Length: 232
Image (cartoon, rainbow, N blue to C red; front, side):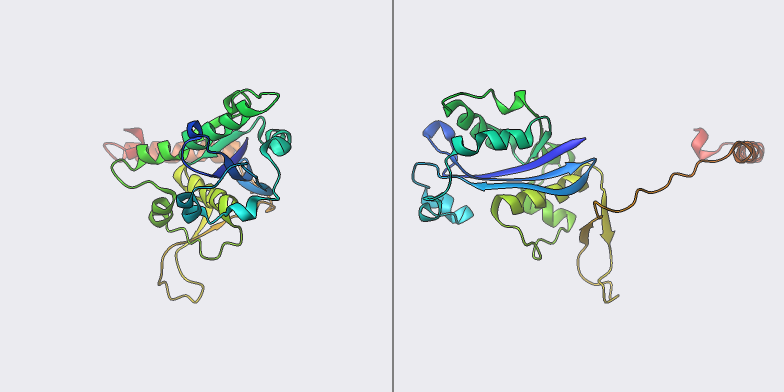
């Protein structure tokens, strides 16, 4: 299963008011393992970035002047995500902007949903943690994810963080280290991803004689008790 965890930064909050995408960050997961195959690009929006937006992501108009236009990167972006399931926090926001950009192309592209599946982690979190804050920052605090050591930045950083949140939100696939390396046991939970290049764990199945002995053992337990928990 191939999934692409995606995040965007924009000039403002509403594409219907002419706002555009200025950054896309993606990290790839295959069978719930990060592969290291990232996609990251800054984009010249051909319009002014609102001051409120700059206050959120820190991307200035001056920084974007020499960056490619969306139509310059549309083909490579679509090639990267096509066929994957997109994992996005508050998916309607990012999907709305992507579809707006696709519709503005000279050769219009279909909505992103026609090329990819879409999974909204905000909807997942609201279902699992009803009545609680479910922003990405809130989920990091809830799951004890430490972001201070990250080397990636902006949309790519948020995509990598979201990958960790998604894996915990949907059932794990991370290593949980409950103690500090100094053995003190103090401090919060440290989340570390298992290496994507580790050897697969071997699966050892019980032999026929072992299964027969196990069945006999269970029969002996049933004879000596009114009920066994796993029989209920």
